[in-house]
Amino acid sequence: MRICPPRTSLAILVSLTLVGPLAACGGGDSSTSDGTVAPATTNTDDTNPCDAVNGSLTVYSGRSEKLVADLYAQFTSETGVTIEARYGDSGELAGQILTEDSATPADVFFSQDAGALGAVSQSGLFDELPAGTLERVASEFRSVTNDWVGASGRVRVIVYNPELAPTPPTSVDELLDPSWKGRIGFAPTNASWQSFVTALRVSRGEDAARNWLEDFAANEPVAFEKNAAVRDAVNAGEVSLGLVNHYYLFEKIAAEGADVVVAENQYLPGDIGGLVNVAGAGVLGNSDNVDAAQGFVSYLVSDAGQEYFVAKSFEYPLVEGIAPADGQPDFDELDPPTIDLSDLSSIAETQELLADVGLLTL
Image (cartoon, rainbow, N blue to C red):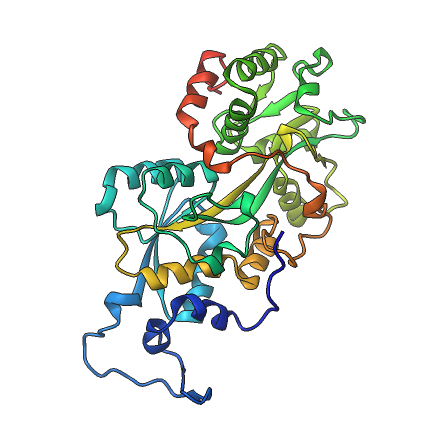
């Protein structure tokens, strides 16, 4: 992974992308030709001529308000750019962007997963991102066409109850052993589960993926509505283990304390079950506020943006030099499968396959 530059003021990092407009219009100080800082001027006209350039951004946010509202406020505080967030499911927001096409009011699409980003990228609606933003993140966690970049990572794990599963599986293929029949929890309608199945399809092929799913279904896994419910069922001993993202356990520990949480995470290095998916963002090519939109995406991969995700959601940072949350393996230990995350866009085919084998409904 690329070594990131030494940390400086976040405002300085963002200004490298925003160039001139925000410095002049963001409501803060501006630099003079000799490098000193001069007080910002005030525009007394009722109509600020900079509003059309960088006064606000419309962000289609597949990341929840609970998770990222403080991040958006932080960006506004640093730059003066306000954000109008339209929250929703990442897949549905991607579909909306594709429907709206070049008429979309979105300046930025901030997606919960790479598949939705890949769908928009394939439509040609994203602008190319600056090299300085892209190169903050390793190539496997950004678009091969340079139009979206990962902001944080989440790892698929097996969460298990050590009292019921003292020797948990070390691969998803071991889940097919009949000894686990009726003892596995999963969330069939959850996007992260469907992204895993998509990765299975992409890496092993349709027939092998169908075979795996049929064998998995024969083991009578227990369906839950959400990953958090799977985690809680494992912790309570209702099922022995479950398929979730790594951070759900850390959220429970933070809320309840390590002393009362029984469940543990089994990481799956080198296995397709240990997929590292990313949340990430791209700038819509029709944006009237391209400089500010590029600056927002740059902000996500700044040191402060990365540290926000570690502290707020226990996700993995994607920038070298930022430490993961306490108790998590180092990123280099995860050894995730090599896969182009943009290929996870074929969710519709995955859902059709899941329906065929009877694993899509609760």
